[in-house]
Length: 241
Image 1: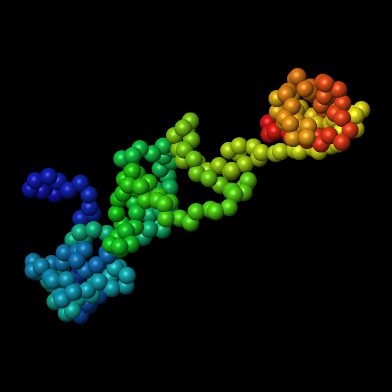
Image 2: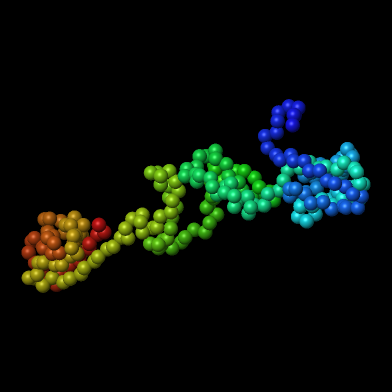
């Protein structure tokens, strides 16, 4: 078919002829249509008015004339578009058969349902992510649990990901050991792997100097200036590693 101007890029313009007999008012359509305005109907060369001369029925599969066209009249219609069932369309693989997008550019477009306009609209990736506003959310007033999940931006993957709080940093563990000097004991037990600079040692509240006042070997802390005097309050604080 020739067109004045640019040919249509999209659309289904199919023709269907009907055989009039003077009594039949209902005819089955070759294609399902969404409304009476989705077809042009001609009876003896006269264009018929939608919803006055005819209506669409049976879910868009039939046309019903207000008056039956007379026998011998030339009746035909042109489809301006056809309706697709979403389930049928998807089952063909039209969408599901496409290659999955593994990255998304800021200008990429998505389909979204605009509830305020009750219609499908397109939205850019940039504007989609702008809607991720968490400023109005309730703030957690308690200490986050180790299994709580946070959102982070993974620079190595250039993507937003979730991470458990326990994976951000190991849970800090402090060990405090208290003892009383007896004038003879100079060795005290500490946790295996504890380094001399990861321990705070106090005698009657006075901080001792690492290496000079005490050493650590394996699981044993040994005072270098001899055993603390009897009755001295000893406190050993193992810092997180």
